[in-house]
Amino acid sequence: MPVTLNYRDLGGTGRPPLVILHGLLGSSRNWQAAGRALAERYHVLALDLRGHGQSPHARPVTYEAMAGDVMAWLDARELGRVSLLGHSMGGKVAMLLACRNPDRVERLFVVDVAPKGYRWASNREAFAAMNELDLTSLGSRAEAERALA
Image 1 (cartoon, rainbow, N blue to C red):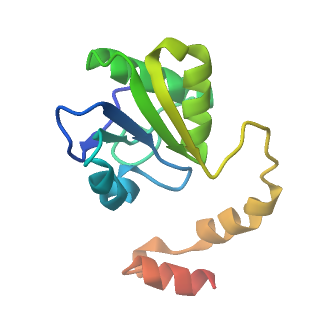
Image 2: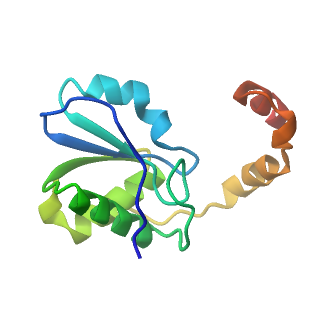
C-alpha cells in the first residue's frame, strides 16, 4: 500500500518536471542547493522516500514499495511524463520505476549507482558505528563526524 510522500518544491514552476530521489542516508533536504540550480531548466520536486525525512516510516522498505509510492505521488499530482534523477538508493528506485513504467519517464538520470546487485558488507561496520552514537549528546553533524573518525 503506497504512503503519502513528503516533498520540497525547489522552484521552476511551469517548466518540465524533474523529480529527485535521494540516497539511503539522505532526504529531500540534501538536494536543496542543486535543486534550485536545476530549477533554471526544470520544475524541481525533491521527494522524501518511504522511511526517510518527513515521509512515513512504514514497512516494507523495499525498492518495489518505494517505486509504488513515487508512482502514486505522480498520479496524485496528475504528472504524466517526468524526468527522474535518482542518487544511489534513489537511483535504484528510479531505474525500477522507469523499467516498469517507461511511458511515464521522459529522461532518467542515475547518480552513483549501477543497475546491478550490490553486497553491502563493506558498509556494515559504518552502520554499526553510527548505531553506537549517542545522538542525545551530539550538537551537530560535525560532532558526529568527529565521533565516527
